[in-house]
Length: 84
Length: 160
Image (cartoon, rainbow over all chains, first blue to last red; front, side):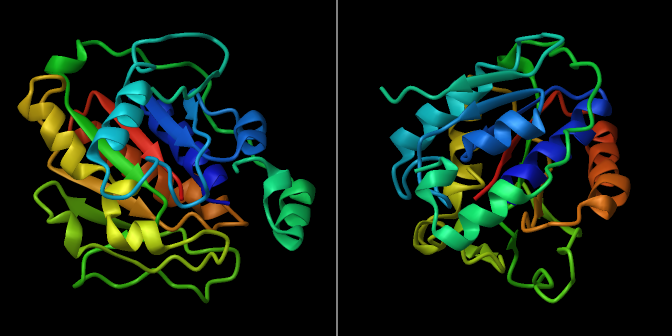
């Protein structure tokens, strides 16, 4: 339910006029909740930034998500994360 | 991982039958500044909290919709999680809370000028909310209003 909660809070943020992006772990939930911008990552539940104590991996995921922020659309933007 | 079919049977069955709510946005907001000059904030649903803050309440039927403010200057290693969900492995989060609230990564990017200085505060929820009415009516808009008053330029959100 964490993924739904993220998408719902994200909708509140976007509705307040603040651009937002989420990292989501469950593809089916992303498809149904439809937050404005999200990056789907192929990591286990509990590991949204990839690996603990791996700043390089965490930064790569973070930057991939931030890359979506300037994008603008009338439909939800859902991208797949591609590990380097 | 990360597809329903990868999850244990009981959880998979629940998630397949659950009636999901749609994210309540109508128009996408625009990023008005380059990232290097913008102020960002983080929101996680990992139920992270400071040692002195009240843990999230596992006993609330439908899920605890409250939130905790996490100051930007927080030492990430001091954060604790009180998440009630049994559906994820906590070992990674307990060993490095940056896994869900990447404050250290945010500060490193800001120090290199990739992003502007982070907001003075970030927010944590417990995502295990099956009845999200009060999240949508109360705490979600309340946090959005706080971030709007903080004049943040963007928000990044993570689940666990």
